[in-house]
Amino acid sequence: MLILERIRTIAILCLSVFGCTGNILTLIVVNQRFFRRTASAAFISGLCIADCFVLCLHSLQIVTKLRPQVTRYDCIVFFFIDVFRLLSVWIVCFINIERCSLVFNPCHMPRLTSQIKSRLFVILLFCLSLIIFSHYTYHMHIEYVYNTNQTIPSRSFCAFKKDFHRLTWESIRSALTYWLTVPICIVCNFIIIQRLHHASRIERSLSPDSKTKLDLSSKQRQLTAMLVASSVCFIVTATPSTVHAIYLLLSKNFGSHQYVIHIFTNILLHFHHASNFLVFIFSCARFRIELVELFRNYFCYKIYANWYKRSSQNTEQIVFYSAKHQRTPVKLLSQKSNMQRRNNPNGIIILGTNNYNKRNGRSYGHHMQPLCK
Image (cartoon, rainbow, N blue to C red; front, side, top):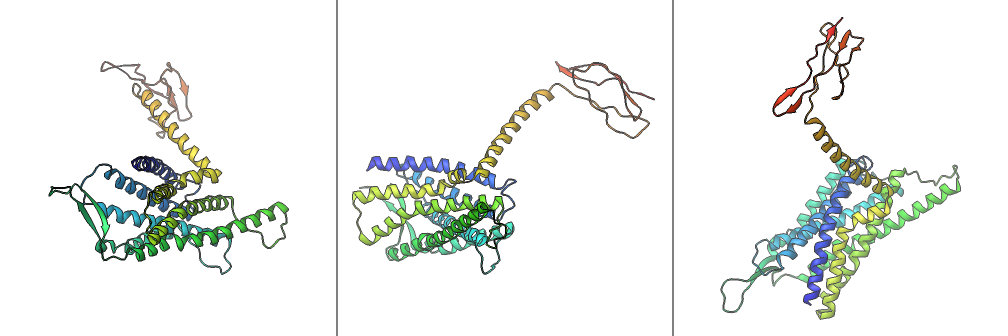
């Protein structure tokens, strides 16, 4: 069992590092040019932030238990893990509803087409999650474990109080995080896939007179494919953990085989919060293009910044202006330019530039004066 615990710890820590990096990159990409003006960008941003908090807090919870110690924030960490996990699940659910309303909306219900409204909706979901789990402040407490012949506790953990109906609450929590959201995601994904398949078949048949043609831009198509793949990944990774947790509560079977299954389903559930980056890469070509462009711009900026620092350390250029006409800057000459005579329409004659090369705190260079006609 000790080997399984170490495997679980290493796997969850690696998933946390990879997931946080991927979620941060996803957050940057969806707020760039292509995805930035869509309402789904706010939902994806909220999903990335919630997943990052779940990964970080869960890793903190594991790291603090590697060595027996007494902490006072166990219940706080447990509370916010459940809050951000519920927020993540419901954001995925409403992403599916928003995508479904885009391709199939017979009642012409209003859609969230504004980024501000989408962000306010994400904040509202976060507040509702805080309210749902606010009873933890009353029903949970920190328990201390004492060694034999010791009055100082050796370690602590967060637990529910004895009079708390845990089976009832676990049923409610699993309904909020799985049994209500997964049917919605399945129905919405079925409608979205069916409508997109029907639209692609119509477009291949090249029938412009058809009244059932679906009018979707390339941006919306790629966003829909990307978000549908994310919700499918959520269903696949969340189902084993939820079903097994309900089975343990009903059967009271806590044997070694069930513990092994619990560890692997927990790792799979943790993978859900770290998998969105991979799903977006493999399901959306435009996301890959934007990601490559992000890296290219970053490395080009670093190369240009280093080149600019090297080139601007030893050179100062001065621009000459005409004294008679409008003060218009004249084309700068390069550092290696010799004395040149150039006529300008403003009546300026440039003889050269002053290039000051810094050597041992002294200035060297040619002193040139402009001649005006």
